[in-house]
Image (tube, rainbow, N blue to C red; front, side, top):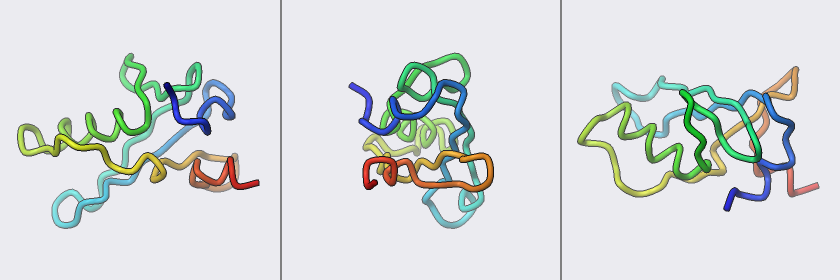
Length: 91
């Protein structure tokens, strides 16, 4: 089941996730879109936590972690700024 925030965003909304690791991966940013309340990336539909786990394995290969990164780190673009998706349920 998707996190409650994603269905609040219209399909096509741009999302980004900044890699949380330091060192050679510190500047990695992943962009995706929202579709049907899930993250759409390279033709696959994922939850935020599932997507971050897969991105880590994509970036670091076999050294990628097998646990989930915080889905709250995803941000959506309002048209003028990037806002954490967790703020959608705070209002």
